[in-house]
Image 1: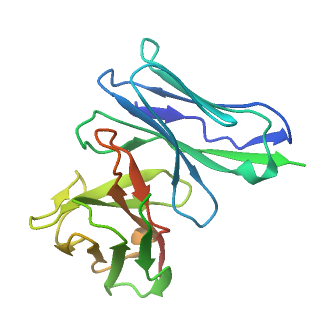
Image 2: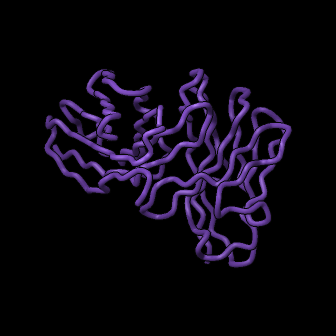
Length: 111
Length: 116
């Protein structure tokens, strides 16, 4: 079993849709949870990070962490074609520990 | 956020040769990281490079195959030695974020390596 599981998709949605991206994990010691966006032929770009459980909102993006269920989510409201990318979840134990990445979900938002 | 550049952006190399990838950051950072992203897969950490000390390698990666230099706080190199087609991948460097105690990292644009 992988430490972090993420559905690779691809996920195709119409413009304006609400997108839900999810990851599950097995290590209950993970403390920091991140979402990265990676456009084709580019490096990953940090979108959101959360410490421990709870929600965090930034514009059209909301990150949720449920440590009791070992489940994290990223919601994108009013999705745009420019949101088309691969979304990677990542998590760490804290204290400059290494990041463990999910496989990434490819998202396509069509006009 | 830090601005990170990598050279070369891409290369096509012959089996048995070596390639050195450079990573330059626009600010001083303590920790730099090297990742591999194989086609259609996620990122796997190769090693962590701190200035002034030997790099720390993850399980499955060895110094003889992936020697790393970290001569100062803004620069690092990763060499992929004695390459085989299985080394075809994207190699990414990253640096620790200035956000204290978050473990977040900023990534360079990557080096796309094809080994024939």
